[in-house]
Image (cartoon, rainbow, N blue to C red):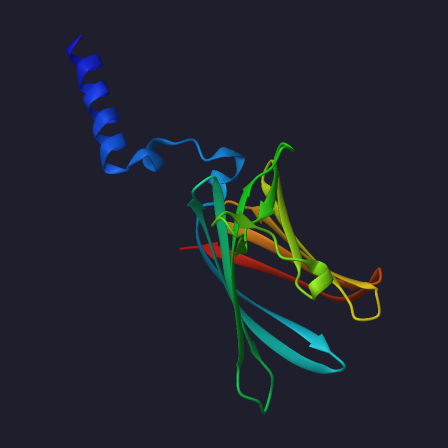
Length: 180
């Protein structure tokens, strides 16, 4: 009886203090939570590029956030850095998540509009694979698709990045990211 009362007190305190996320089941994506770092090298038109990579996957209300940064090193040039952070929220489809990249008129979160030049981004979780898709409608009405496939490993994540334009591969990058 005492243990039941103590558990009730802990749950009540967590609720009052806003700690409910500590006890929440974050869904099939919770195994991906953490910070990861890595690097890779690839060649474009005979020039070798090196890229530093980092990613962070964390819980947010009703979903999860994927944040990542790449720093590209090209011989003779300053490093070029890009970073992204996207919240994903549940949809009516199991293991499929919509991006929540902007606020609507009422403060709710929603996806961007690809017909306005913005990417349409979504994610899916399939066992030990978290895949993020970004679809862009090009000015001529074609499309560009970015696919970030992150597979859990013993040490962290294997990343497979693919960039397509009108179904033609433009770039493929593979990397191993170690969990910090």
